Image (cartoon, rainbow, N blue to C red; front, side, top):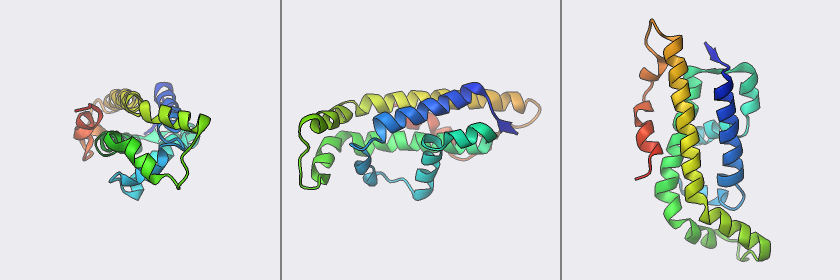
Length: 164
C-alpha cells in the first residue's frame, strides 16, 4: 500500500526545507564527515531532504517511510552527540586557511549558534512524521500486524529524538 497522505507529504516537505536551510547548509555540512553514518543512510536522508517531490507523486510504502524516519532520527542522535558539542571548533579547523569575514562570518556564526535549536526542530518534525505514519499504519492494518512492529530499529526512535 502506498501512502499519499497530505499531512505526511507536508511534513516531509517541511523536514526537507528545514534541513536544507538550517542544518545541511554550506556552513555546517562540511562537519558532517565526523558522523558515524553509512553511505546508505546518507542516501536515504538525501531522498527525504532533496527528492521529496518524486515521492509526492508516487507515494511511500510503509517500510520506505519508516526507513527514512529512522535515518533522520539516527542523524539527529549522532549530530547531537558527536557534532553539536564541538561544532564551532571543528568548523574553524576545517577552514581552508581563510577565516570568513563580514557577512560570511556572521552567517556561519548564526548557523553554529542555532544548530542545537535547529536539531530540536528537526527532531520534532521527524517525531510528528513518525506519529502520523504509525496512525496510518494502524488504520491500514486493522486486521493484521502493522509494519512498524515488524521493522528493526524503530523501537529506538524515542531515544534518538529526545535530547539527553
